[in-house]
Length: 147
Figure 1: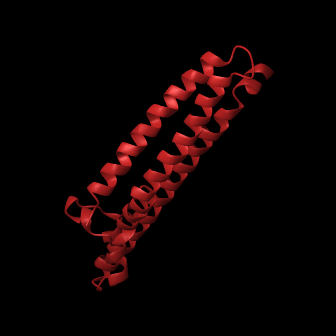
Figure 2: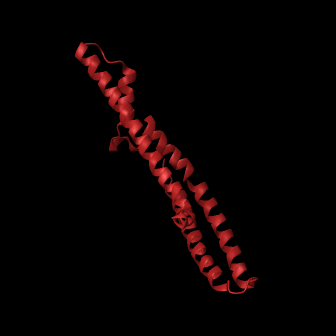
Figure 3: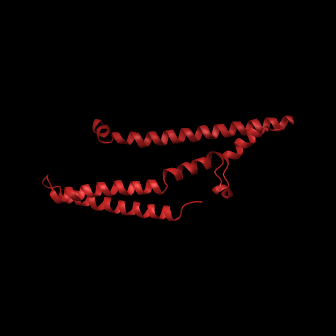
């Protein structure tokens, strides 16, 4: 049993990510349910619903027509995602991955440690393909930039 935990200790991180994501979704569900219950209470009493509550419900919903509109929580999430994965970051990823691939090509050429030529060359080929894909994505991201 100890070997299981020693060999697979890293599984704690994805499981923790799943747990935190599920907890965030649960809290979001509770928040939207409480907001709708409050709106129902206002409506049952015959009072006007405060615009802040309606705005909060509208921010939680997502229409296909609002895809280019950066209002609300989901719109801000899209804007942050574009800022994180825009052309600058794609070029940066291509440069870093290419540099690491170059280091593995050099390591496979000189082979300071005997028996590492094959594995280093395989890693260098894979990283070269990833660098080329990142470069292609960077060029596409800069060519088809959102307006």
